[in-house]
Amino acid sequence: MPDRVVQDFPLFPLGLVALPAEIVPLHIFEERYRTMIGECLESGREFGIVWAGPDGTNAIGCAMEVTRVLEELPDGRMNILTAGTRPFRVIEERHDLPYPAAVVEFLRDKAEEPSDESAEEAHESYRVLVEEAADRELGDDDLAAMTAYDMAATVDFGLEAKQSLLDLRSENARLKLVARLFRAALKRLDFIERAQVRARSNGRVRF
Image 1: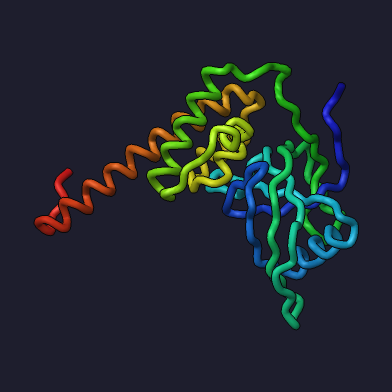
Image 2: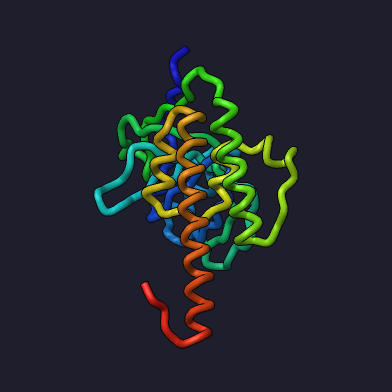
């Protein structure tokens, strides 16, 4: 079955990468985006965030839904909460609407089951990271239900790493990638803690 194609999908190019399951707060102030979000609120439709990076706007982005309007200001600006839903690819830009839009296709993963080994490795790395960074313990049932997107959406990775996750069409590949990212984050966290101890002891951090 071909992926679903939408002809006039609203786009919001930003200097960030959003992932499915990620909560993203947005401040809407430009007239064109106020119009876009207003239409999304009225119709209940999604819009898409695409990363406008140093090499241009990426073709693969994440669809978002507005989950809550936090504040509406007298001049029309608003603060909203949005949640990532599903990845898409831009096929062709549209220039006949009052805001950026495109013909997009929503992307499906490969028909495969993630390996138990990949899932266990990702979940265990995430468990340790959350315990070390947030001093919070996760139950086995909570972890087992989490996808790679669910876990990655709660960690502040770099934009390139997040875009790499969004580009993958395999949950197994995403689980392997987030496991590597979580291990790297743990190493950085360990280094920071050791550096702080050394700094407190003699005012210097030795590399």
